[in-house]
Image (cartoon, rainbow, N blue to C red; front, side):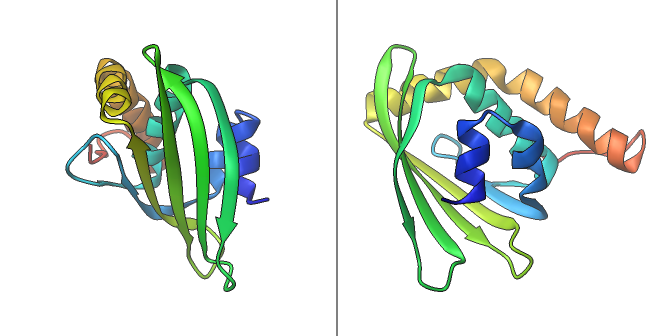
Length: 143
């Protein structure tokens, strides 16, 4: 089982953050532009854990080389059941450098967009606080 899956299932956000490369790129199912960086990606994942209920991984697919993974999940958001997949790529150090999330159906993706939109000020604030802890006041997160 992939360490990311174990951490998500345990709601262990410290481990999730530790598994992310500093330059990780997160591609959201509901945002046009990807997000770059560990702080914003970790904050988004925390936000998702606040809006999803009944979350569970139902399948894991790994490539023979061990650097590409697909984690298929089910969850509920805003009363809508959804199916989704986390597509993960790890760098040479074994850290996640690319995370693409896809969800279906459209009604659930819309509910997810609304729920995450309501969370986004908190997500941006959490990411900014993390960057400032690591790099000092005045550093900026790209959101």
